[in-house]
Length: 155
Image (cartoon, rainbow, N blue to C red; front, side, top):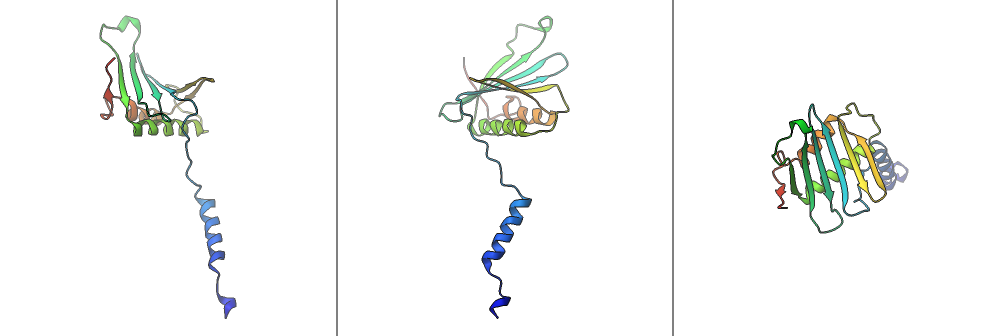
């Protein structure tokens, strides 16, 4: 009678193996080693560039910031100030870092050469091409015209 019984530990180990082989564990994106860390997202458009420069303070209790610059050729420039500085909430700073890590981890080639992500640290600078979808996701996080959780900083 005991030969027909199945031990729970046998079934548990088989189920754990099946689950782990089909569903990999979620990836953890550790905070950057250098603090602050600098990310730049550059989006090239027809006659201008949108540049978002992020200063991420993920390990410290200091605020993260994003500077927006709408660059245009000199013959189109006016006297209006096109550079804006905002404070980035902690959850948006974390989301920006996780998105940057996902972009770095993707091994697929980008279909668009119009968008670029740069990471600057004390060791140097690295650049990656972004897809249009990744660039739009970054814009929803860091563009003050799309994300209304950003607070303007006085200079």
